[in-house]
Structure formats: structure tokens, C-alpha cells
Image (tube, rainbow, N blue to C red; front, side, top):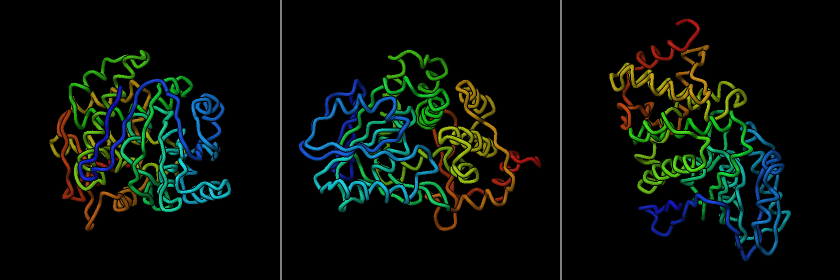
Length: 350
């Protein structure tokens, strides 16, 4: 299965997302694989057997969201310079969303930009993070506030890599799948309520549909000037949750699940989604062992962190909300008191 990416406003940028067994990858230049010890232990040998190139190197960085920072980027860059990669060299991101984001960002920086390929190994990165060219790192102010839009030359999705994925990591990917369905495709959401994720063909269809939905959005709006912001449904809340817990308590998809529930609560207050639809979304998240509760300790502090969200501008917070199942509404004029009322419903003082 192939899903093409053709950016409407960047006619020269086109690549394929291939969902199949990993093929042999042939390069006529130096290649560096960026990965972490966890993925290396399970799958690096398989990947290296599939690469043909003039000179092959592996750069291993620590595993975890807490290492997604500029210090790690500098470490990768120094290793690439030490191995004498040049402007024609090629990077391969081999891991989850953290690896993909940092490899893409490194590729955008190295000698003003070199090519890179995405080979995602987690469900979250296969259905979302590897597609669309968002790259970057976190800092003390928030998530992905430093980065660039930088597209890969290809994405290869092989579901065999998911066989060693812990259940918790798999569930984290389901949150991003649910996000796509709630925003864009009610029938797809209904399918997700019944689908068997342990069936390989079903899983590949789910991945394909999620990638197709994301491709439709990215093709229209590469740099998040419009509709692409909708892909951040749940993320405005989730990024604050991650920041408050120092990126150590929740996986990204877990925080997104919490954020989806918070966003739905706000949408219900605005009469955009009814109780039954809210419950169906929550039930689907719970079915996949995703967290749906979070205790906000300081409502005012939580609210203030919204202003660090990249979608916010002119001192207005942009919220991506469901408008029933399969539709969305973008609002940047919601009364502060109403938002804080919703946040208080998640606090210990509710």
C-alpha cells in the first residue's frame, strides 16, 4: 500500500508513504542511522541487512522524551561531523516519534540541510509522527517549540516492527488514530469501535486510513497555516500535561488521550458534542488502556501555559474541538471563565 504525499504549495516536494515489508534501500552515498538502544536491540540487525550504501554508520542516542532537546541534537551533529558526512549524505530515522522528530531536525540543520528517510517503529509514529515533516525538540517552556518543517524523502512502515512494541506504547498510538477519526471521519471512528488490532490486515488498514487522512491535510497545509492545526486536537491540553509532569509520567499518546477528554469536555460546554458521543470517545480510549483522568493542581497555572502553544497568537488561545463525530470546530474566542470552569472539573477542588 502506498499513500503519496504531494504538497500543493511545494510542487517539488513529493514522496511516498509505503506500508509493507521493508524493502532493500540503496544509496550511493554515506548513510547514518539514528536510533536508540531499545530499538537497536530488537531490530537494528534487520535494518542494516536492508541497507546498501558506500559507508554506513549508526548513531545511538538515549531513549525517552526527556532527551528530546538541543543537547541531544548537538550530540548527533557532532557524531555526524566526526564521521565526515557531507551534504550528499543521508540520515535514516529508525525509531518512534522522538527519534523521527530529532533526526528530521538534525537533517534540516546539518550543512544547511541533507536528505533523510523515516522508518517508524511505533504505532504512534507510523500513523502520525513520521508523516508530514514536522521536526523539532522540547525545552523548559514547552513541547516542540524549537524545530522546522522539513520533509523526508520517503517513509517506510513495516508492521513487523510493532511485534516487540510494549502494550503501553501500542495504546499510545491508538490515541492518535482516535484523534484522526473524531476530527475527520465518523465511519472510520465506528470501524475503530469494532476493529481487531491483533489482526495484521486490519491493523494495516487502520494505519493506511490514518495516513490517508493525515496526507489529505498535510497536502493542503504543509506549515500549519490553516487546516493542519486541526491535527492538534487534544494536544493543546496534552502539551501542558506533559510539561507539568516533566515528560516522564505519560507517553505522548497517553497525554493526548487525556487532552482529548479535556477538549471534549470543553466542546460539550459549547454544545458542540453531546454526552453520548463524549462517552463513546472515552470508552474507546479506555478500551485501549489509555488514561482519561488527570488532576490539575493549579488551574491558573495550567491555563497560563496554553499561551506557549504554537497555535496561539495575539494573546488568544486556539482550541481544536470536535463538532460531533467526524467534524471539527476551531475556536480562539472562548471566554477564560468557561475554560477555567472545565479545567476546574479536572482539579482536586472540583
